[in-house]
Image 1: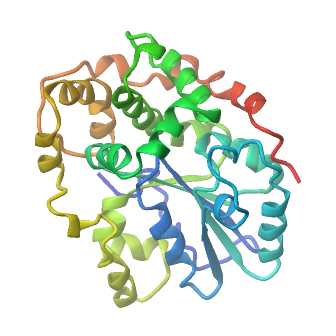
Image 2: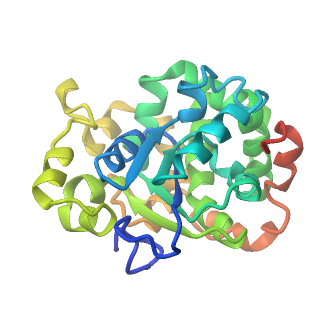
Length: 296
């Protein structure tokens, strides 16, 4: 299992191969290192890295980010692109990126994935308000409902628990890189664990000295100070029903990216083997009608 899932050999931000300033976007399912990597890019002299610029700098919350006028955001991005490369992380939900591409050319999408056990634990415990918003309100609700139809879930969407919808969120994000590639975007996928633990992998992406990158990797982005947060420890803290639900819905996600799972022989992998091939021509396309025009 390689960290660069897309198999692209040269993805470094060192060279301006197109003869103009580059606009890169970091995307992922949340709590997967987008803030850490966005800040790291700001340490490269020819780059400026943002994290959630649209929400934080423009005083927009995620609850209304899809209805607010994004013109101030684009004014800032275009101003920065006059003199340097720009990387923005997590300002846009991944399913919005084909719409963003129509406004501003995206030279590369860095898509981050994470061990699903740790990611789900982080989503449901560290930010319960956000995770509730992400599965019940604004465009994410429509996106999850679309994914629910394609993935052929047995339980009615409105009967799903919060835990089940978070599993659905993680499952849907697994197939998002493939969706974006089919929409014509240049996507490179990395596991967060590889970027934060393997300096050689991080060097391929970020053109800084290995010692500098090791200092960034030493930051406690996994919040180890809070105790044992290993997948096996978190797994034991879940109820039997939560473990069974995760195995049924997210085991294929884990296997696709080479993650180990504490328990096997539960769940049906065939049902989720590749739902993208069935209805990918229409999935998520209605999302645009639920979001305010993102043009300038």
